[in-house]
Image (tube, rainbow, N blue to C red; front, side, top):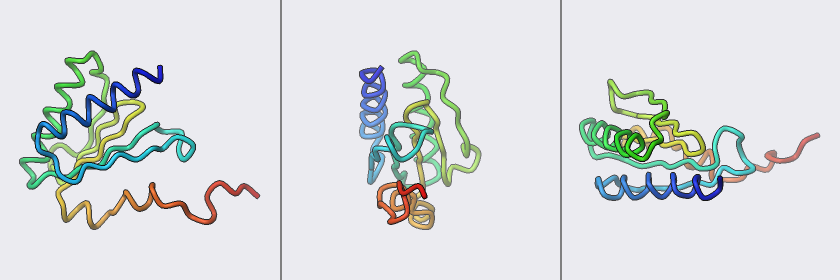
Length: 117
């Protein structure tokens, strides 16, 4: 199963790179969250570019037999979330990404994390 997860991540990263996504960041969530193993964050230059990135990524996932991905945010394309199971993808317009700054939330270790009572 680890190979499949790695393959899924590689497929997503390759497709985003091919479609000229900007500032692609991959965050390892193992041990931080049970919701997924990896979070990938990327930016598109405009609403249209974010929408195209999401559309092309969903097509690539479907063609690879992983068509069960859930999507939110497609109508507006400010922030599109694609839940592909063990990999979650966030696609943003740059100013929306800067506002939410989710990379910092997940990649910076807080002093209280991992310390149960």
